[in-house]
Amino acid sequence: MYHQDTIAAIATSSKDGSISVIRISGSQSVSMVAGIFFHRGGQPYPLSDCSSHTIHYGYIGPDGDNVMDEVLVLIMRGPRSYTAEDVVEIQCHGGYMICQKILELLMERGARIAEPGEFTKRAFLNGRIDLTQAESVMDLIRAGSDIAWKNSFSQLRGSVKNKIEELRSMILEDTAYLEAGLDDPEHISLEDFSPRIREHTDFLKSELDHLLQNSQNGRLIREGIRTAIIGKPNVGKSSFLNCILRSDRAIVTDIPGTTRDTLEEEIRIGSMLFRFIDTAGIRQTDDLIENMGIQKAKEELEQADLVICIIDSGSELEPEDLYVLEQAKELPGVILYNKIDLPSVTGLEKIPVSADKKIIPFSAVTGEGLEELERYINELFIENRIHYNDEIYITNARQKESLADALESLCQLWESIETGMPEDLYTIDLVNAYEALGRIIGETIEDDLADKIFKDFCMGK
Ligand code: GDP
Figure 1: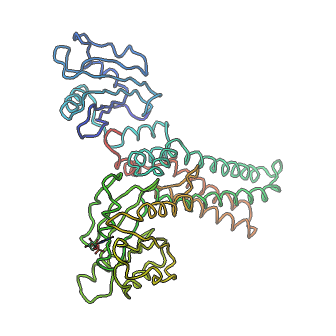
Figure 2: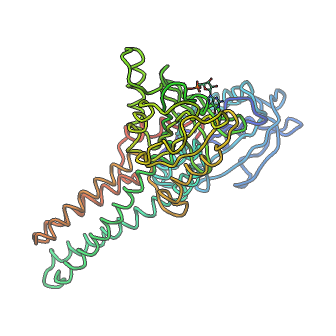
Figure 3: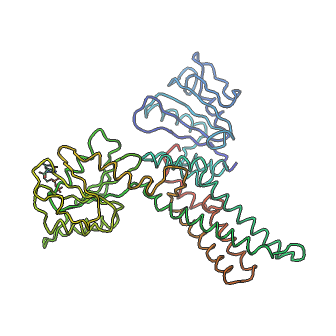
């Protein structure tokens, strides 16, 4: 065990709730809680004699005559606990004051307030989980869509760790065989080694390449699909956003930091999360202020994964509409032929086929076309790009970087094999790849990196 001190924190949300949970971890956790836990009549509760994974009903207070809340206490002795240390959880009535009072009692008995993520950090340092599992914990808590939840949960259960370990053990075997052959050429022949390492390197390269390709979609899973809504002024961009944000929808949050020119909203559609960005109307103008908004809209477009171009069916198609479609040419997306509740002036056939996007007749006022749009954009990603099965999608930038390092070493190894370099040169690339993969699972980790990773965690996690 790495830690001797006992830590405590409120593990539940700070908002009002019916119950709150205070979590305590460390060698003194059971005895500390035993000192403040009493039977109904005020007699001390012999918690230290109780077996692991049991629940106890009683009262919390500085002594048996001054109890402050009626609680349930759960004991989980290490290593069968979240941190792999002795963990006690106190379920008290929800509320800031009660939790603070209980925490104060624990502090008086020598506990220290846990840092954000410190419970998970201990689980990692005590070897119960690897770094990819630790990193998945906050992704799971913050998951904003089915697919994000499914992906982070599979990572928590070890999908990334197992894959990385499988690849590492292959590299390790080859390295060991190679070193043995180099050390003892009389008994271990490297003759068969070349075809074998060729095959393995090819396999490892393609596995890493696949993981890296998938990780492009990892960002879409974790952060949502950036969807720019574009169109000339007054075509109904804001009305469309209001229409798709209908109040019976799931998560709808304002993103802080958006400029006055763009508005960003998060919406769950099907199993994916979409971030809709309402841009300023795009058109060619000499107006300086308006131009700034247009510039911003173009920047949004550059970063977008998906575009929704809106055309007003109630007015003539103008060069400005064509300009909008031109701007969106490179991106997957749809053209919303909006305001179909009004008599049509544009005519669908006037929309250039070269725009190469599905056209959906739409009304932001009546909601017509909304279901078709939602189904279509969800399908554009699910099954087309993201398979809702056991694929591994790396969503974490740190993990991605190490994957790329490992791949680079294997490419160098491949180069050495292809150019017939001597075998003793292979070791260095094999070891580099092995170490880069080791960084993903946190086999070696410096303190400042660990601090950086865990500081973004919630309190009590
Ligand atoms: P934006 O400048 O592109 O954001 O356009 P707005 O959303 O502000 O809409 C401009 C005007 O068109 C407003 O008066 C809206 O009420 C109206 N509008 C938007 N969508 C529709 C629609 O589908 N049908 C009708 N009849 N009016 C619409």
